[in-house]
Each structure stands twice: as structure tokens, then as C-alpha cells.
Length: 356
Image (tube, rainbow, N blue to C red; front, side):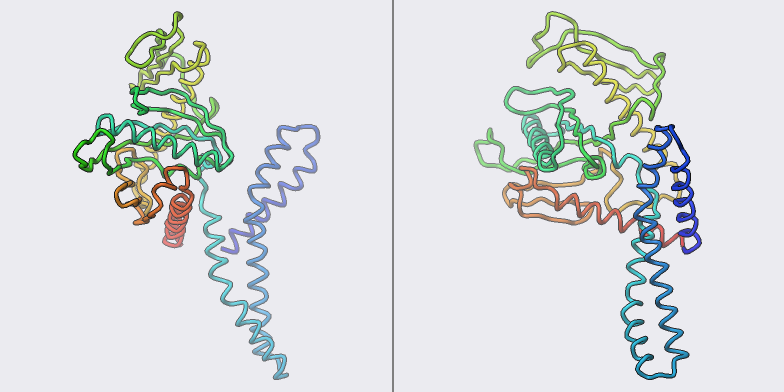
């Protein structure tokens, strides 16, 4: 580990020298500054680790060679204080050495769709949308609806929305999957509990530079926007449907007033879906990939149950339960998110330990 850390420190110092010599190339200076900034934590921990090991060696040498009983006792006390710090610091460093998901700092596109359960599933989809937007408000993020389809009674067949904020993807990436609700629908006259579902997909917003889509690969159809019930709400054809011919993916946007805005939003969603599809392909092709405690991130994976009669929410991937269902539906989901991130970090650390 020391050799690897020495290499990182050397590169950090080289970047510092290069930054001093970069001159008027502001773009290069910004890139170097960003890389150095991302390395600062691991370099700081590397220096702390080296200093700790040196202190332990000095204490051991003093215990072995010092003839003065009092000095030897002080060295033993210092050694007893320093040695327990080694393993936690090593684990912290190993976690920092794990390659980070390059998408973690990106904004997030979320898609919530009603699943099984008819109108009740659509109402639950609307509840999930509200939950995520309330959480976003608490994080001081911005929310933009990209497309939606309502059922007229407050429910949503589907909705796609953008959450813009620092680390949005890193916090919400484990929300992908099937969410299940158990409750008595408002339309249920006999008080029976129904089970309905909604699916959530979490996609990192990606730029054009992240994924290239040749114009020959897409077909763009233009049509008039439609409201609830299918009636036309626009005289002009502003709605956009983009079909990615190689994959068969279809994205439609009609919520903006202009054809251009709808096209830009549809292309943004398409890029995110194609990028995620490529990431899933890469993950599945890794024969040695470990199955994470927090699941696969696939849309078909059942991840969480919201039980209204018991005011209970259970995440089945990590066996984590909360009895604050009303609070969660108002966006108080930080506890679940932090636990999922912690479990994922533990899983990645275990993978590093296995490799070593």
C-alpha cells in the first residue's frame, strides 16, 4: 500500500509543478486544478498514514533500546495509543483507492412509472414523485419536470423529472427498482388492503461529450401535444417523439411550449438511457463482479415496501426498516439513503480486501 500511496503523492506533486508552469492555458489549468482537488483527501490520508507508521516504529525502537525505565514506559503508552489507529486508517485509505463512479457528481434524471394496481398504482407513483421532490427541496436542489402523463385523479401513469444539485446521482442511484405499496385505496368500500407497485429508474444526466448519438441512428416524429383523455391542447405540432433505431428506445416529450425545447429534453433523456444501458452491459460482462448488498440497480428488482396500516417502510436489500412512513413520504428519506451508501462502501471495501 505504501508504494501505491507514494506514487499518488508523486503525481500530486507533479501536477502542482505543472500548474505553476501552465501559463495562459486556462482550460488546462482548470483541468489540473480539478484533478489535484480530487486527490487532496487521499494525499492527506497517505501522509497521515506514513506519519503514523513512523511513530509506531520510533516507539518500538525506543522500547527495545531505551535503558531508562520512565522513557520506555512513555514509549509503551504512545505505542498503545498509535497501534489501534492503523486498521481504521487503512480501511479509510482502501475505500478512497476504490475507483469512484464517474457519474456520482452529475445531476439525475428520475423516471417514475405506475406498475400493477391500476389507478392506485398511479396514485402511488404520484406519492413517490412528491417524496423525491420534497427530498430534493431539503437538499436545496432544483426540480424540472421533463415529461409526464396524468390520469386525472391526481395520479401519474409516468413522470420524468430532472434533479439538479451537487452529488444528486450519488445519493439517489440506489432508488432504482420496484417500489411496492400496501394500503386501503380511497375507492375501496370494504376496507381491504391492496398491493400496488411503481417502478423507479435513476439515470445520470450526461452531456453530448459523454455519449455520441449519430443523427442517422434516430428518427424524429412531430405531433400535437395531448392533454388528459387524449384531447389536443396545442394548435401547432410541438410534441416530439425520438426513436433510437439500433436499440428501439423511444422517448417522447410534449410538456414544453416549443418544439425545440421538447427536442432538447427528449435528447437529454435518450442520452441518459443509452449511457445507463452501456453501463449495465459493462457491469454484466465483468465475470468477477460481486453482487452488491444494495442490489443490482435493475428496474425489475423489488427493493422496498411501504406498508400504510403499520406505518412501516422496509428496504429488502439491506433489511432496513423505518416506522416513520408519513415522514418518509414527505421526503425524510435521508436515513435510508445514508444506510444504502454505507452498505455500498462496505461492499466495495470488502472487494478491495479480497483483491489484496
